[in-house]
Length: 278
Image (cartoon, rainbow, N blue to C red; front, top):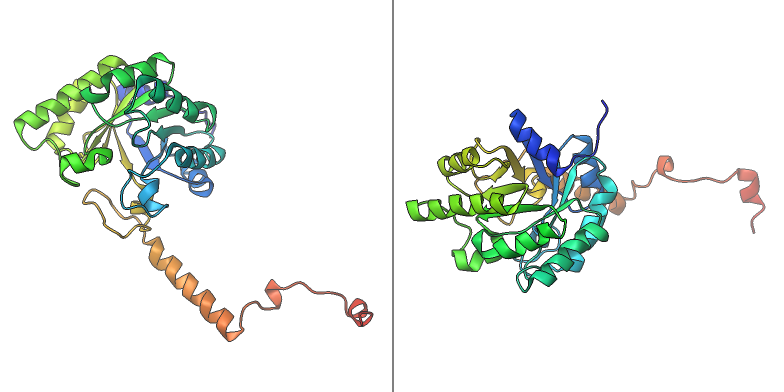
């Protein structure tokens, strides 16, 4: 099957055509390569790398340099998927200039195709400035991990009429300033459905029900590689951590007993040549 590089316009066309959009996170070359081979439409190099790969307690310590490092690895592996660089905490909150320069690093240094930032009305001017600079922006509203302390923890957002209306207004605002897509995280399904119906741009849900135009999961959640906590919305498709643990234990046991390596895993020298060595 002939494949071409996916663009933000292709993602928008998928909504118009009624085709569901698939999105996963990736933080390294081998995972990106496999996701690309599987035909995933969008790969997000999420600041969730801080928790899933780097061992931080949350996403706040993640730096731009760390994000660029991981995004470079992903863009080496994925040739067809649309690759999104996730703007980390304080990389866009300080000024429009900082936001544009940091977003530009994703494009110039890491060869990403677009960036994602969290927030609605609070980031309107900054998101608009990034778009004006020629960088595609994916919005993100609902549960926004970078402001988790203000939200009071990992909680569903938009559970009353006032909060739900603000989410709808934020989504419409993000569309109005030129965002090509918006992530809806931990939002009641009926509210996400209403937002999806109101917007001309695609919605990507994570804990936002089946009516969004697409879905995203953190790859370590769906592979069973992150067990500090499992969000309700994360479906585990396989438990790789269990398989990996068994493999590590088998390796340790074989090395301890001297049953690995065998001849099959060793190199040899001709006996005549060996006899010449003193």
